[in-house]
Length: 93
Image 1 (spheres, rainbow, N blue to C red):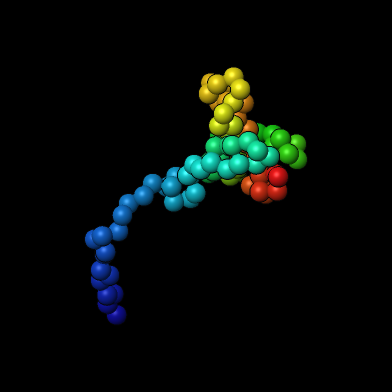
Image 2 (cartoon, rainbow, N blue to C red):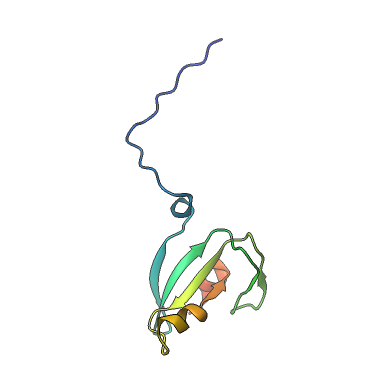
């Protein structure tokens, strides 16, 4: 029994694995503060979630949150970035 050759669509746009699995950045406002939020697909180290204080293990997805208008500037905002569990960030009001 022979196999049929499948046609390959020529107009499919290539996207990176980062974008395909939710690696995008957007701005959210919570408690009157704007945050730059991005999904981390596979974290490279363990992080402590600031909401539940549990460990986010390396290799697990999380949300990286950076305050947009940090009082001490953008360098301090990067230093103060936090990794959250997806559900903890969604429940943060």
